[in-house]
Image 1 (cartoon, rainbow, N blue to C red):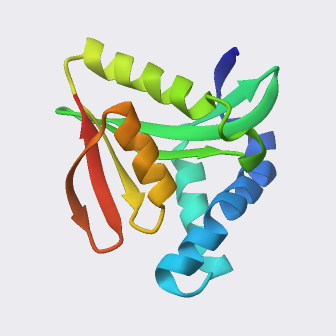
Image 2: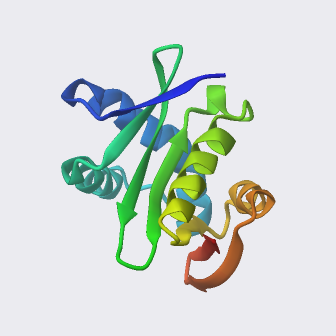
Length: 145
C-alpha cells in the first residue's frame, strides 16, 4: 500500500468538512450528549484556516487528513481522520509510523489527545506504543518517544 501525503487545497474544503462530520458526529454526541453543527463548523474552520492540514491519498484518492504541529520540545498530532471506508487497512498505522520516525529523528516525542469515549482509537495508539501521560476532562493525552 502506498500512501501519499500532500498539502491541503481549496478544493478539499467540502469533503474534509464531510469527513469531520462522519468521523466525529457519533463520538461527540456520546461524549457531550449533543452535536452542535455550528460549533463543529467553527472548529473545522479553525483547522482549515491554520493551513496545516495534510491530505492522505491512496491511489490518488483522498482517504484522510492529519495536522501535526512542531513545538520546541515535541511534535503534536493535533488531528488525524481516516474515512471509515478506509479504516482498518493499515493507513493510520503507516502514517503515524512515519510521524513517529520523523519525531525520533529530531529526538522529540510525538504527543496527541484522544476522546475518552473513543476506546478504539485509544487501544490503537497503545498498540503503536503510545503511553498515557495525562488527561483533561474529555481527553486522554498520550505520547511516544
